[in-house]
Image (cartoon, rainbow, N blue to C red; front, side, top):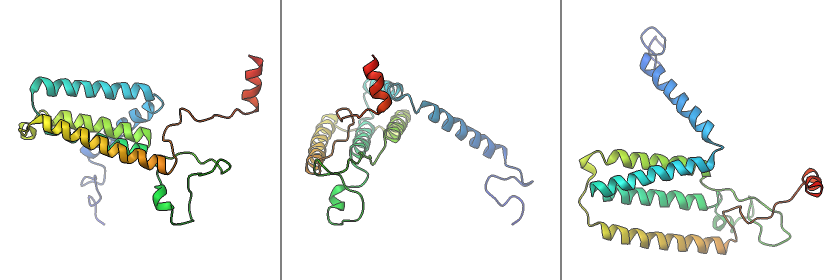
Length: 196
């Protein structure tokens, strides 16, 4: 292998300035993502704020409805993946090998593992909003459509998809939210509760 054959290297064997710049930019981006991980509420508030700004922009410009429709379908797809278990119970029904959700009271508890974790859901949803926002700066994406039809079609698609997802949740007895589940206390937690 001769000098300069590897990716990102200049003729002299050192990484090029452009390669170093984008590598450093990627590291900074990943660092900010890592720092934002524990702040779930703040991340979602920022995403909702971006979504609000996007909706205001589309309303004021009176266009880019097809981009907004595509964004809605993308967010619906992400939401369904967020609500779905990582291993589909309907596929595991026929085979006995592998984990399954408990079906009786005395079976072992297995935690719900999502197909799309919350952080990846937030990250993909935020990137989708930003891409849609960038698309509103280009007239090529401003396809003339009758927007009430898109709204009605999206509502119908949302209802049908959520009905199917809820039926799946009822059939295989899983709840994708941890809010109402019982939490057990250890010895230390129990002694603190009695001391208070």
